[in-house]
Image 1 (cartoon, one colour):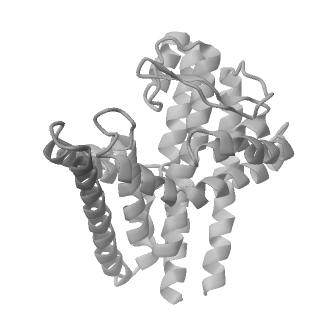
Image 2 (tube, one colour):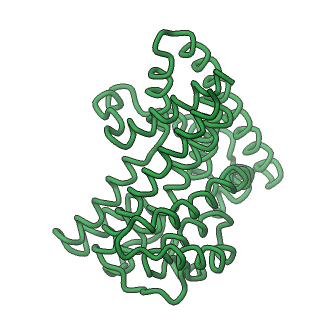
Length: 325
């Protein structure tokens, strides 16, 4: 129980570091970010084992084996590292420092802010360029409203993937849980697509990522609704209604929960039909009936809600840590 309390306090420190400071970019320019290391392994495995001449079953089996090795290896590294750090003086601080780059709230906020700034200062082309860095859809034909919606959708979905889920799995399994989750989530983002190349090789990664994000996605939506009480003009009850009404109809089993909650809380309609790889994907509107014509001001309101939701996690984790002492 004492070790779990220490881990919980370390996660609290990691959240605070990510919120106030973010990643030490100077360091990561020299040695690379942990997620980049994971991505390099996945890219190597993709080239080595995802052969187009193989049968679909063989490609799926190889993809499953790669993901299993990635998750197990990451968890083992996390376990060893955590054991070493917990044996040092100042164990909580060291563990928090190591965990902090695995929480991606600050970098997410910076990227979404760049979209709002780009639209306001550089016009639609700069806005498209900024949003292309955080979404997978075609951005060349997006107007200001579509760029703004895409940025807000990314903010909502990645609050779950980048902030809540690492905290959730960290509270349960410590650093091994955070590293294993980040490995799986990185694999899903790289190979968990329904394109011809990854339909079979990335299938298991996509399914496991859906399972891993089931509870964090719904918790994220609930946190957005609660946080809307602290946002001037926020609509917490509309966020709650939109979440339960619309999220089950999203093409993703998880992304719709934070997206619908944010859409309802801001009075917007998000998701809907989108273009990926030249094909139109028909999806339900999250926050159906809300305003479709989003603007850079709406992005900034979404960022304000994000800040409040981000801050809401801090007392929640603090209460958990205190209860374990």
